Amino acid sequence: MKFAMIKDLVNNKEISFLKSWKDSNKYFLRIIALRFFVFIIYSTVVLIIGAIGLYFGKNISLIIGAMMFIVLILFLYFRNAILFIEDKNSLSALLLSFKYFRKNYKHVLNVFIISTVIGAAFNFFIPFNSINEFIIFSTINVLSVVLNIVFDVWSDLFLFFSFKSKGF
Image (cartoon, rainbow, N blue to C red; front, side):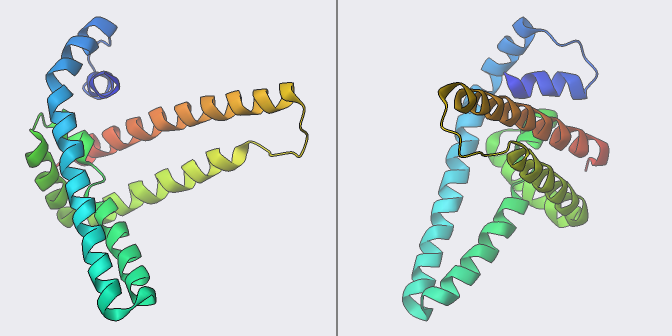
């Protein structure tokens, strides 16, 4: 439902909960399939890293694995935006995400860096004190959850608007 609302916002359409609910049903199986494919891709990478670790050793596999995961994250970064904005099926969204990265790698890298830096700022925004009083601890937890929700929505909006502005 969130992505359907963001799609309407990006396309300058009126946002309504009922319309977003109906649209989200259209994308439900696509999102499940997309997450399944991403799981298969990551699992394959983990198996490859494990094989590298058995053959070359732990240190080499950690370095190669970290590089593979960073590249994979960048390759798949716009998969949800492509799924919704381009109205593709899950496999097409994955393939177009790879193609988009190859064509616009600087844009993907810039959006990733901006999102990561702002996400880190949100995570460090709340001071952690050693005060163990229940009220203060509960307030900090609630504030942390609210800030994480705000960042999550902002991050998705930023991602969709960035994709829409650059396009294929």
